Structures are given as C-alpha cells and as structure tokens.
Image 1 (spheres, rainbow, N blue to C red):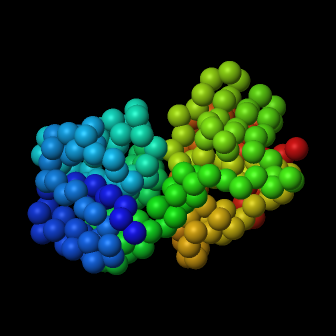
Image 2 (cartoon, rainbow, N blue to C red; image 1 turned 60 degrees about the vertical axis):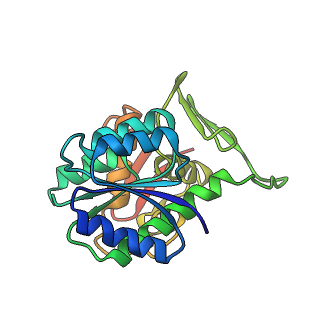
Amino acid sequence: MNERILVVDDEKELADLVEVYLKNDGYTVYKFYNGTDALRCIESTHLDLAILDIMLPDIDGFQICQKIREKFYFPVIMLTAKVEDGDKIMGLSVADDYITKPFNPLEVVARVKAQLRQYMRYRQPQIKQEDECSEYDIRGMTISKKSHKCILFGKELQLTPTEFSILWYLCENQGKVISTEELFEAVWGEKYMDNNNTVMAHIGRLREKMKERAKNPKFIKTVWGVGYTIEK
C-alpha cells in the first residue's frame, strides 16, 4: 500500500491528526492548510484520493473538487462542520463521500479504504469472461465499463467514479429491483448501516445530471420501500 492521499484543511491540528492516522496505515500524505497550495499539488503530483475541507481561507473545497473533476477521476471526500441536508447533497454532487465534523479519524481511514477499493477495481485490467458484458445500450443511454464513460443521447455525462459505479450496477441488473442496502454494499464495499442516506443523495445527483423528471424518470426509477431499478 502506497496510495497518495491529499489532505486539505485549515484546522492544522485536525489535518495533522488525519495525516498521522493515514500514515500509520501506510499511505503517502500530501497535507496543506489552504486551497492554493493544494491546487499546485494536484497539478504536479499523481494522487489516488483527496480529502478536502469545505471552508478554507482562500478557495473553498467545492471549487477545488470542481477543478479536480476537470481532469481527474480519483475519489474525493469532503469534510465540513455544516450538517444541513442541503450542504450534504451539494457536497455529494461533486464529491464521492462526505464526512461531518467532528469525526473519529478511524472513520476517515475506513472511508478512504472503501473509496480506494472501488477506485482501484476500475483502474485494474478486467479479465473478460465469455458471458460478461462490458457495455450496455438502454433507450439512448450507452455505458461502457472499458472506457468508463456514459453517453446519454449523444452527450457524455460527467460522472464521478461513485456515480458511474451506481449506474453500472443498476444497468448490470436491469429489470431487477436493487435494494438500497445491496447497492451501497456493492458500490462502497462495506456494511450498510440504518439511516444511511448516501445512496439516495447520489441517486438524486445522478438524476440531475441525466436531466430526469422527478415524478416519472425514464431511467432510474424508485420502488418505494424497496430500492431502485432500471426497467427493461
């Protein structure tokens, strides 16, 4: 294990603590207390994951995440002291995960491991089985596991790795209703806990990017009390 993690937080004690825990687990850490220095690192260093505080003295975490998404697909975890649902959904619209302060550093390490497991699966060459499908074409939406791209009515969707994984899993199981628990455990690779709204927030953002109608979506449909499905 030698994955490179970017940590950006103007609370120095907190950033230092996260750095210690990540280094103890074998990660290489690039730590900064402001957004300007972090952006220089992003441009000059190969990174595998970023942990970004939202409230920074110069450039906020959302802007940094948007800059990352212009060129890179590695996972981004947002840190914030805000707890309002609107802030959480906004964070997940550009990031892959979201942690509210105060938090246990061990939780951060666990989230990092889960995101990296998912990210590394898509970086590694896939051994193609005879019955394995690497592309789906569903009513004007084409999604390719090989290119890691999704084209909707001729236009490429700018999806985060997590959003792509959710959409791919639903396409892979087209016609089946996938529970929130199954979807979470398949995509995040960890045990689902009650009252976890992470999947719902990501589904909401996916629908926004796909310009889906809330009441009658064409692709990702909600089966209330059960989960989600893409119908055949």
